[in-house]
Amino acid sequence: MLSDPVTPTQITRGQRLWLYALVTLIALFLVVPCLLVIPMSFSGGTYLEFPPKSLSLRWYQAFLGSPEWRQATLTSLKSAGLTTVIATVLGTAAAWGIHQRSTVFSQGLRGLFMLPMLVPLILVAIGLFFLFSRLGLNGTLTGLVLAHTMLAIPFVVIAVGNGLSSYDMSQHMVAQSLGANGLVAFFTVTLPQIRISVLSGAVFAFITSFDEVVVGLFIASGSNETLARRMFSNIRDQVDPTVAAISSLLVGMVVIGMAVFMILQPKAKR
Amino acid sequence: MQGEVAIREISKSYGTYQALDHVSLDIAPGEFVTLLGPSGSGKTTLLNVLAGFIRPDSGSIRVDGQEFLTLPPHRRNLGMVFQNYALFPHMSVARNVAYPLTLRRVPKAEIARRVATALETVKMGHLADRPIQALSGGQRQRVALARAIVFEPAILLMDEPLSALDKNLREHMQIELKRLHDKLGTTTVYVTHDQREALTMSDRIAVLNHGQIVQCDTPSRLYDHPVNRFVAEFIGESSFLPVEVSGGATRLFGRPLALRERWSGHGTPLLLVRPEKLAWREPEGGGNRVDATATEVIYQGDSYFLNLELPGKSQIALRYNPHAAGGLVPEPGQTISFWLAPANTILIEDAA
Image 1: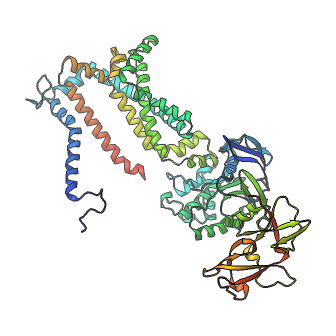
Image 2: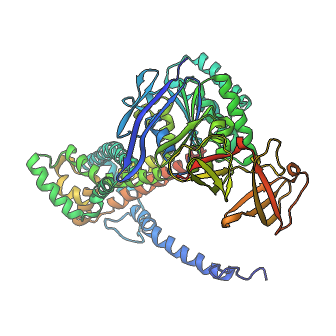
Image 3: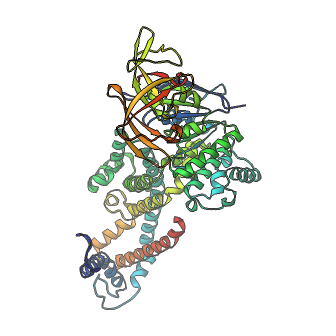
């Protein structure tokens, strides 16, 4: 019969229904927190509650009208922007260098670049706090960008490394034989072909910085408080729906960003 | 004319593995030299040393009098065609070919003219605006070639450029590459493991083994005067028979053997048997006669495959064309004779 499984691992149509159900459940589990936050942000009350008893835009007003919130948002955007640029450049260079040779040394370097992702964040934060207090970098944008760059580099190294693993190195060699020095060959031949990987590394770098709380709690105080840190303090001290409003705005931004990315993607691919 | 290459004493080792062992080779301007050898013989390593991607441990390469080893790859001004073509997939055919000219800041109008000429040369002019993905293997091969010649490099390097093509296209491209070389006159260094390809295209062939050049000669010299068993086996079909040498006299299976030239080599000599040099009837002026028993006779259309047993348990296998033998087809078990004219009776060294 055509409906019988051909191989032992092939599943029948009936079994596939269960697969659909399971995947739906997992997908729901992933998005429900986001979906809950959005109605909560339109609450008319003064506490985070679900479902909200009355609706209003007052918490959006509270966020946009507050100089402190605006200042924190600006700090986070600056920090994330600078981190993205620096971490993408350094991480791409590191991934390229590691990819050139497959020696024990280069594999060791890869491990070294992964460290910030493997060491418990709280240790990194405490270490940075003590180091920065000696250097006078606590509470400065420079300190914040340095710390976030360190945390973001592993993501760029991984993303770009993945891109390079499917890149044909003889392209780089042929470009050199045709008269391009290493740098020119990289920018005219290699980079255009791994740009999607570099771009996704950059997105990860941005998110790493923008979303970061633990290190921020230690080193981002005073006028350079980040948005994530301020949201965290707000939840701890007040629990008003401002954070829900901010979160909803961020979800909206991400959805728009993803949509733009997916619309541009097919063109970029061919 | 430019493109004179002098390779001197190039050595390269990876740990205990000697990839190149004191290789020296002179290439005349405009010459087509093929590096031929089995995989691991060092032919690709030598090409990459020429291109500048591998730095040798010692030695020197001079091109038109200038030391090459201290130049980075992009300043060597040589065109290279890779096995996988390495075309840039994010550029059109025309932009691929224009790439080396753009780097050299050639004016736009001239770029357009030279790209068109190069594409015409490889018969790809009508596909200039195609994306690389839309090309077949043979077309990619041509574009890679156009890109390598468009800036008129002093030397053209090719690393098994035809090995990814199917047999018919490969043979067609061999002839075309040869014509192109005759037309452009660019010094060409070509790497292959295919002996027929090497014989078809080259002015001279350097046979490599274990990182050394075993013999470098014209195709016909290499075929008719191989220096040892390795070269004889690598080029053309061949079988070997043991001969006895004692006090200047040479014997094969007890019979005296008339030679083209006296054996003056070292070690154990072997008689080189090329199937097409065998005569199945006694030639005028005589020859060295060998009796054999056919143990296997296999029909293969244009020829027969014969397995012959000779005295002393030696065996040789060869392709046999009955037209050359007056239509005679031996039965299995039948005894037949063949003759080798003294001019075709060549002894070689039994060195691997």
